[in-house]
Length: 124
Image 1 (cartoon, one colour):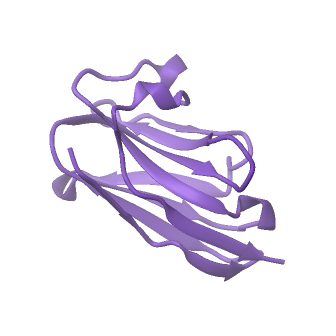
Image 2 (cartoon, one colour):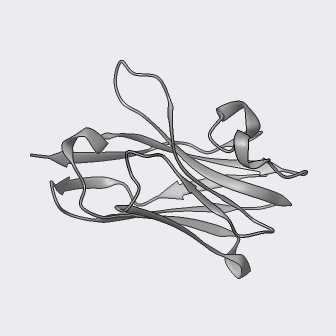
C-alpha cells in the first residue's frame, strides 16, 4: 500500500484547507493524525471503508470533515474554521487487510501504512 498525501499550506485563522490522500491496495480504514513540534502524534479523524463510518477527535468535531472517493481510493480531510492550534504536520494512515474496530480507530498502532506528512500552518 502506498500513500500520497497533499493539500497542506499556510492559511489564516478562520480559513479552510482540504487535504487528500490517495491509497493503493486493499484498504479497510484510513485516518488522519497530526503532530505539532514537541508534541505527541494525535488522532484527528478516520473513516472505516466498508461501513463508511466516520470518527473525529473532539478538538476538530464540527470543523473538520473526512470523506472518501471509492473510485479513486482517496480520502479527504476538509478543514474549516482553522485555528492556530491546528498547526501541525498532518499524516495520512491506512489499514490494509482486516478492518479496525471502532474503539481502535484513534490508535496509531491500528494502522499498518503511513504516508509522508503535509504541513499545515495556521497564522493568527
